[in-house]
Amino acid sequence: MRGTATRRLRALLAAAVGMLAAAMRLSGCVAVGHFAMEIVIPDDAKDDVVQLDLYALIAEDDLEAPCTEVQDERGEVNDQSFRIAASTSSPLPLPADGPLLSEVPTGRIVFYGIGRDEDGDAILRGCVEADIDVERDARVTLELEWACGGADEELCGNGFDDDCDGLTDEEC
Image 1 (tube, rainbow, N blue to C red):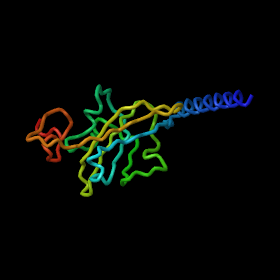
Image 2 (image 1 turned 45 degrees about the vertical axis):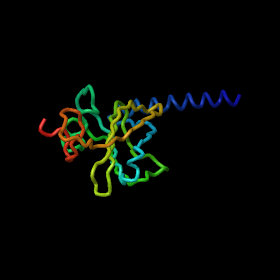
Image 3 (image 1 turned 90 degrees about the vertical axis):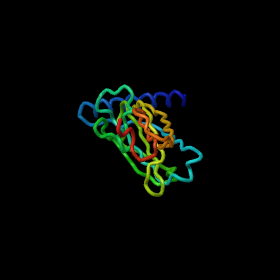
């Protein structure tokens, strides 16, 4: 009997959340999505990264591969193609008792992270797309990778600072 009452309560709660989300959309309010995020930092970078900048982005256009276009030539967020829906900057280690990003809207979201060293230089970057929903928790894994490749010259079009000069895809 208790199990049946619990299932009914969950169903009523889910219906209420759905109606609230629909009412918010109709009234022009933005529904806030639910997600859990795991951030993966390479083992050989854990001692060097002291700050994480994290962004929830919405592509302004229908981009086929938004993660390849998220950075501008300086490696920062390309604000010509993306709208920042939410952002935060946190020192490491990250807090374990709360969300890093709050007020992330529902829909297709591009999550972009920048790991910075003690000088503020971007040494790690990562990007992942996720569908965020108001009714279910999405699992998002953002894997950060080295932002600089150590090549002798820049390779055009890969969105990566190959030659470690702090610029991405310059002179391409």
